[in-house]
Length: 192
Ligand SMILES: [Zn+2]
Image (cartoon, protein in one colour):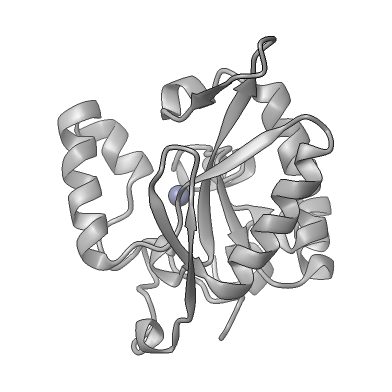
């Protein structure tokens, strides 16, 4: 498994990837069953536990997606948000990093005073909590994750900043280097 695989609008999912992919299934707070690449899922569980010690409760909205799932997602976004926003935020089927199983879209749960949780899931709600994202992003490299679509990525490509989309690269050292130097995966791999 190549944990530094590049999938973007210029690089489709490598052939044969899905046959090699080993996934595990996790159930989120909403009850959805989410498939995720095995090591990515295990690292995610450690990240989640570490953040809970600081009172931050993350969960998975989406991880592995088949090409067919991506087609359906794009249809839903077109109906809900229109063409311009969809073009900036939803990859073409076959060209989504989610096909690798290594990408995770997070949401979080706010703990209320009466100990119940409120799920914050929709993109337009998630962007209203930059201070929570900052704490989540700080923890990512230690567990081998990077923030994939940074503000720097947005400046370079015009594709939207996505605080929720994280990518497993398997190596805390590589993740730390990319984060400290503010390099996109494309820049790190010298394939931009
Ligand atoms: Zn995503």
